[in-house]
Image 1 (cartoon, rainbow, N blue to C red):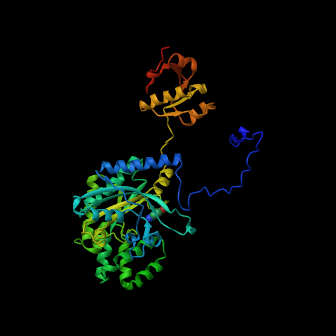
Image 2 (cartoon, rainbow, N blue to C red):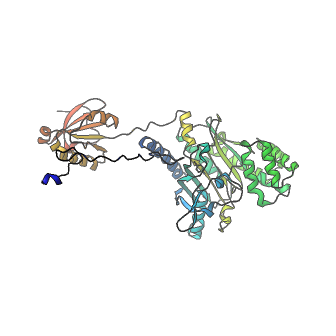
Image 3 (cartoon, rainbow, N blue to C red):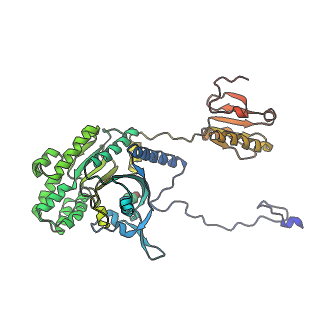
Length: 454
Ligand SMILES: Nc1ccc(Br)nc1
């Protein structure tokens, strides 16, 4: 009969028992190892953080740029033994090209600068917020992705550029309520290391490798560091001298050891003087042991740290004057920093500075009669046309509307009932005060009068 073709919609019909659902194995609903989902609450926090990254960057006159997450693997192949190289998330694509998920943004930025060539006028002040990846054996259970905020200045050889970068991060911290008592920047210059290596006739091409070895000083036993330094040809005497200098924590002491005319000392003294002028000198301290873990840094390096010493480095950066020329570009001076989205959230939690970012919807609109859903939709359209957010209740038999209204933190409930609608009115309930009244549709505005005339 006709009903045989009627779709019982899965409901048990007199003629047809419901189809027996085949047993479906549930997929793994978690994101891939080391990666995160961002459900609404986490997404609001992420958007708030990124908004602060972007507003500070724009406050400093930087322009936003972006690049593909996927890059040629060659962009990141450096032979200095960096962790970032060991953990490259790389593969061969279907066109047999060696590609990689970017582990950082700086090489992409350098690539774009070279690509733009003479069509861009210097100095360039660019910023980006982008997801970066590493493939780490899950033995350590660490994340494989994070978002990084980068600011870079291309074309300025002077430490005025590094001062501007540190000043921008200080501004960011202050916006979030973080003070110089909470965090600081350890600052040094790789020219200290470079001068020392030259004193011991260590060839320049070993400079990056030596920096990477020294960067591991806090993570590996000292004799392993010494062994690694010896393996690149540095004598025991030079190693002892190196380690002694790297333990210096005062600029005057460094000047005593290296001499006043040394470029590294001059750069650092200028940076500290600029910090005084710009008002962030309480945020920075000299620490000769800071080298950072990227091979391409050539001058000033800095890293943000939490003074309680509970967290990993919050951010880091420095000067990388040779990177563009290693890609075949012009020898342009450059400096920048990277600021990850994870440690900062841990710090905000520690300091109880996480913002309360609950969902806030202006209106929830509900029809009391299924026949009036169209009218409710029209009310929603009118309000949205006025720029007001509306959660339109879509169930034709709405239940628990008040529960939903409080969950979405709606400011007011608009009820569309037949008798009111006949009179061109809708009901309004201010959820915070409980105040209730009727109003004409076109009188619905942002701020209803405090005491409502009938
Ligand atoms: N470079 C990098 C990439 C991804 C994560 Br998580 N940490 C560092």
